[in-house]
Length: 127
Figure 1 (cartoon, rainbow, N blue to C red):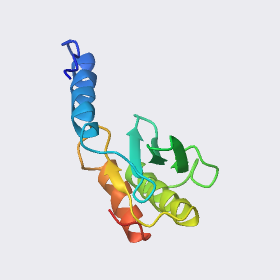
Figure 2: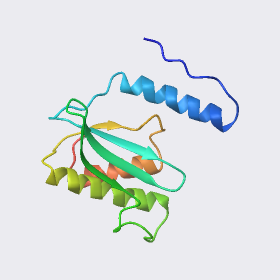
Figure 3: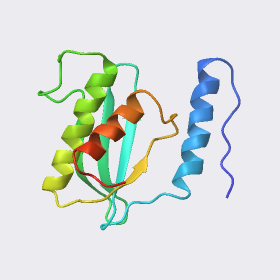
């Protein structure tokens, strides 16, 4: 099945390219109850992470820079992403999740995305 994304200019082109990459990734990645999907969504201001069981259609754990424990904290965006990674890993472990499938959402695995993933690994989640 082909997914068409319009070609545009400037930022719209970047968004369309990211959407194409995300579609390409999601064709192969799906979360199950044994290994849910760790989805990372990044905006200019914040970063959001969710652990999702795609079969049941439930979010098992989530964390973001909007959480009270992280909001307004010290450090740059990468430091905040590390805090979000550790927090989502802690909440996933509390929900009984040991291993996840990482979904970077069409973004490049660098910077804040990599910082979040590394912090989640250090906190005990297996990718």
